[in-house]
Image 1 (tube, rainbow, N blue to C red):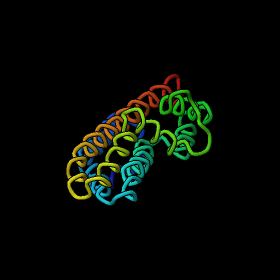
Image 2 (cartoon, rainbow, N blue to C red):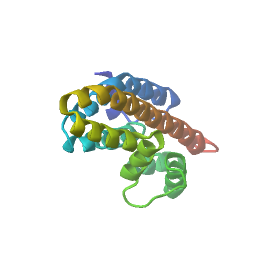
Image 3 (cartoon, rainbow, N blue to C red):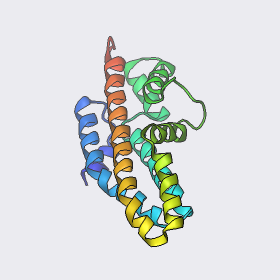
Image 4 (cartoon, rainbow, N blue to C red):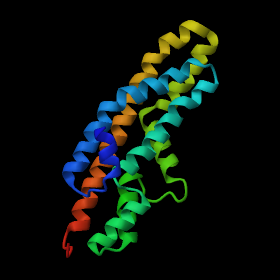
Length: 175
């Protein structure tokens, strides 16, 4: 119920950013568990964790007000150049700045690779192939733990980005 209000209300405040981050952190176990459950399907399950991380990244970005539409709305409120806000967000979310086009997916996969989830997923799938039932039971905790860390890292990075964005947007603003 609280999440619905927070996601529908476009409030550019640090308190709301913090509250959104806390709510997302409270749901990380559920998202990680659902993504990990997909790894029990040999081969096809390899896409479940990266796919869930990419979807979560997009949801977090929308929730923290870091989408292009939200940035344009903030730019109008603060009389800032929307392109400046977009560049700031891109530089904070993706190491090296803009990736062009599919930024959400590329950033999610960059975060996944940074934590080693791609390697863990490959090991998981090989183990599942060699030891069909037991392999999934052995590797599921690994996938769950790594997915949990990746999602928390995404939340922290986006929460910090949103906070920095608010500082920048309202600094020397006429609002």
